[in-house]
View 1: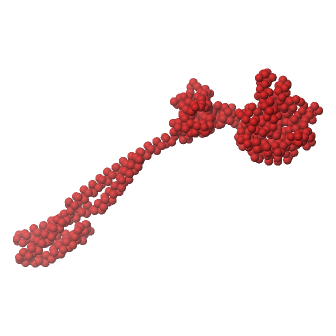
View 2: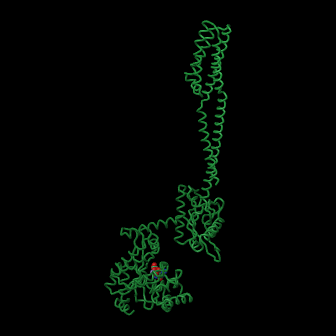
Length: 633
Ligand code: G
Ligand code: MN
């Protein structure tokens, strides 16, 4: 509105200036000096006519000097000549009908030459000469009066000056308006820029502010922070709910900040805090305060939601050469790591750097390993026998466990390897390698030894896709491991897919004889629903339920109820983590079917497993028994 008005004014002033300029030019095209000259020239003509007139009358009265008269005549004559031919008198000639009138008067004057000469030679009656001359004189006077341009010139000068003044006034006005427009635009731009850097919801500086940061004091700590439940809040309470949470969360964080700190709202759920050096507080205590403040029960509508946040910190550092970007990235990395490990915060430091380096090493090793290239990563398989609870020497099979040794890092926990595979999208490849390797190693059991026991494999989440059936057929069954010897273990976490999808997979694989087990039962979130919904053959009860059963009656009874539940649901129970004799006896008494634990056997290399099977004391199911079981089913 205002800007449109200003533009209108400027446009009007510009048009007016242009108009004045054109007018000025038109006025200037009339040369004032030429006009003055014309006026003066004719005034001279008048003067000279006057002088001749005087001489003529003196001479006619007999007192004049004929020579003077002749001179005056000549002067007038040459004035005409000058007026009619000289370039300087052009303006005079060109004005109105001056040219014609001058020519007429000049010819009249020339006609006077003869009579005048005759009178001077023999003076007689001057009357007719004087009459002619009077006519000439009157003509000249009229011409002079008609051309008295002094007024005209003055008028013109005034007009031009007025026009100039108008123009310069307009120029000043235009300039003023332009300055006003410029100021207005500058103010508007700076306002918009400032507004653009502020998040409208929280009133905090936003991502643009973050991008504009060029550097921070090295004594400043950089903290990134993410609200964990944010997506949940958006999906349950919509944008309005999310905005309310953001405002509340901002207030909570602000309470922990001093005036020299800066809080930036980086993206929807993410904040960046620049904490200036504090004399009496360490980063750890600051972060503890922040964790506390961002951990609260938040009331929305009729419900209360628990809100928490994850923090990543790049603490004040000695290295002044680090750029803002590098430091921000380090804080971010710490946040990511905290999120991955489900911790509330991570402070960048040796610990984190080492972990990240390790991960890079393992990742690089994995890539090379899965590419069949020489690798620092020794991935191999071990076998943990699963025995009958009631007959310790009866080995029903084994669970294949992944072991990993990195050349410089040493033993790497298998779940870390699996997590990394998941994170870097290598899950399927790792699974395929596992299938091939299992077939390669255990084929001999089924071909040479008439072994009918089972091989349990842990499926990582990425493998639960439609290719699973083909992969099992091609890489395991076709490679010599009978389908009915295979048991696929899935955890509740990777069964987070729809039950229908998994049950379809289970039933397709069951056609190949492959069994399924629900692994680590009891450690996930909705265990019972999984037991009810998933059509699995075995329930592997997590070792936390075995822990302490020999010391606590309640714990033992609880384990008993889980075993009973498995039985009721037509599932074999596999009790994990049996570590001593007392536990074993209790498990047997409670009705557990199968046992997997250190007290039975520790995970072992393949040849140890084969030796165990071949041991005179051991027994195991044969393939014939499996056939019977199949047909018996
Ligand atoms: O979740 P899953 O059943 O796949 O895990 C098997 C893991 O449990 C293996 O890494 C194995 O080494 C470990 N394990 C097997 N038996 C015992 C045991 O008796 N005690 C303990 N603490 N761990 C065991
Ligand atoms: Mn398992």
